[in-house]
Length: 178
Image 1 (cartoon, rainbow, N blue to C red):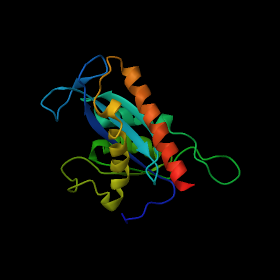
Image 2: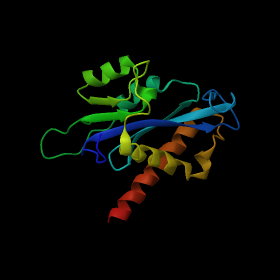
Image 3: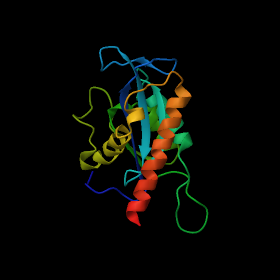
Image 4: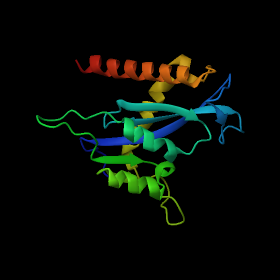
């Protein structure tokens, strides 16, 4: 991949968050010695605007939540006429490189650029210099103290704070552009 993203690229990634209170929305985090945690999954556009954000258990595989993220992806603004409903391309790391997810992405008319899994996989995600866009978006969510850790006992509350944070991120980027 080159260092520039095409206009209608979407990037998908996830990050784990430690849960201090627990609840039904948490699970043992495989990267944090089995402590309870949550994971935030996001799809961002080419400039890093979060388009879809969802939270789930820390021990949930990334590809399970990816189907829901694709279903929730909003319609894209384009030229006059019928609005496009999906991006041209979806980029993601090896956590999303399962064959069934790659088939589903192709079936929806999206070109998958998901790092494949298995013995023939290349080292790294293969995303080159474009991965920083979605990583930066996930870092922006870490700037909000209320969702840096999961303090909530109810998953819907934690999701609501993420929705609010995504709205604030988008509005800040909008005002910076003006």
